[in-house]
Length: 159
Image 1: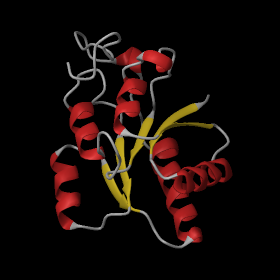
Image 2: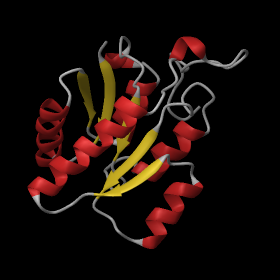
Image 3: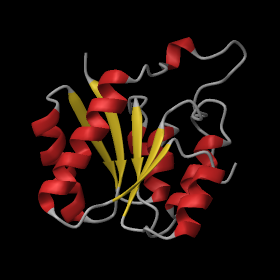
Image 4: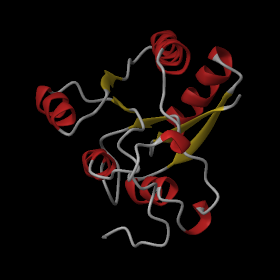
């Protein structure tokens, strides 16, 4: 069974490294990329060109991006009954205590600072794969709690 991962990352180099690392760690991962927060929310809400997007099993979220930063995306995800059960892992260059505390206050499921060394980055992606996509039990859209609604297709991002 394919595992759907949404990577929200504006750095083409980090996207390529993450793609390569997941390919080496787990051939079952289908990595989808959103290059900013607005695109990420369109993907998650299945809007526009993302109308047929799969529900991610995991979202990897950078904090510092154009148009809508990762903090704003995280807040929207965790305040949406249809999205908040998707594990959202912060994967960013920031090691600032404020960013870590803010991310957890916004209900991030985990926070990782990107390592500088290529081998360390590959090991981190393998660790994320091993825990979140192999060991952890993940919720699926079809088993949402009664009365919970899935992503709101057709709604504007500001709603």
